[in-house]
Length: 172
Image (cartoon, rainbow, N blue to C red; front, side, top):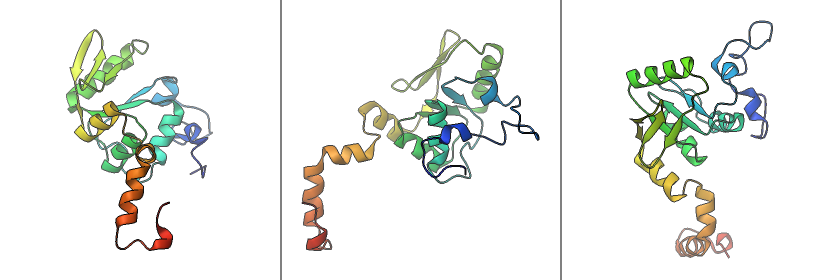
């Protein structure tokens, strides 16, 4: 980890993997497709990091959505908390998508969260999105802090009615 805040975390995404032994940028996909906003990955992406740093870094790099075979559960949930869709498809579909990107790097992809599809090469390809993520993204309720603030009267009422919340802890 190079940062203690999220502000500059984008520049450290896959920092070592994107460099050769001398520290020069190599042919890593993030170097080759700089400016892409959708990341297409393989199986169990995000495994190993139970913190929000991984999706925070990707978001600050410019990634706005992730498509893969599967995701580590905590990574996927942290993506949802940032409003970043994480869609899945089978290995063959992901490989076809990756091959298309490799051969047509400027063609572009579009994620349709409502329809659970990815549009590319003139076609809509069905994907899977966790129903809770889909609902949160479509309803604008992925930011739980904002939802709590917008319902502060209810939050205060519930907090103040709980028998185990001492008077000095109650929300006023």
